[in-house]
Image (tube, rainbow, N blue to C red; front, side, top):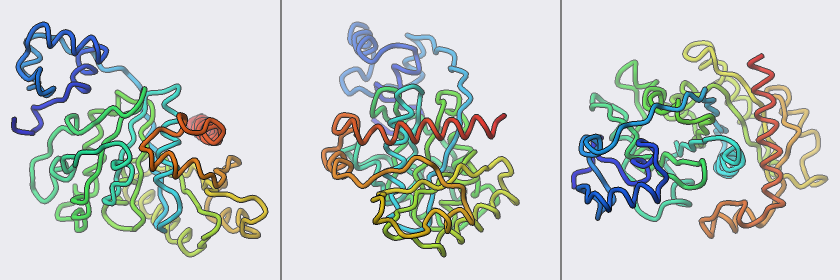
Length: 308
């Protein structure tokens, strides 16, 4: 079956037509709807059998998890902040890094290239709905692939807003959208910051670089001034924190550029263990998950303050 914007998988179809996954499976089996064996369907075919439900009117908040320096824990913060938020909210995690680390933790098969759906270099933009995967209760993933690394040079003015335009039709389905950004400056990161409402900066306390923080702050200011005036700073999160072993004066150095969260993420072996097992953190270590719940609460509190 040809993969295009008119094809939808079982999980997405069940959400689109307002059924639980099990009920939808039973229904398509009972009706022998074309595609029921493979678990993929033409949307137009499904519309002959089901009525689409109205979109839930969530006012989504888009948060870019960004630091141009590698090894700061952007994917870890993105994964488990999204998991913590999903305990009470509908969440979409966007893997916006060509390394696709978040994607590989959840998906065994090679995903369809998101680059083919963005309308880059004159190609036709397509709905990203067929790409979105359900990876947990209230938690969906928009996967990445190595092809995204080809998003390097803007060919048209609109190339800076490809991600913003791609997620616009699905924003009403989620309360929070988390973007796991790549460790570099360039067109990919600029797309993320233009699509986002807020930026959160993970900082690995054993490898602190004030230069990297300064460069990211300059990029933030440029995007805010020229392309996305609604973009706001949530602050920096100290990651892999080890208490007294952390660098002296770390918070003070960061505060020159970003506010610092009170919540910190401690170095714990359960985090790489959960990733190695391709598991949600809450199933591996409830104590470590508590740190991410505290971070999620502080994120929501900061957003509420900024909105009011």
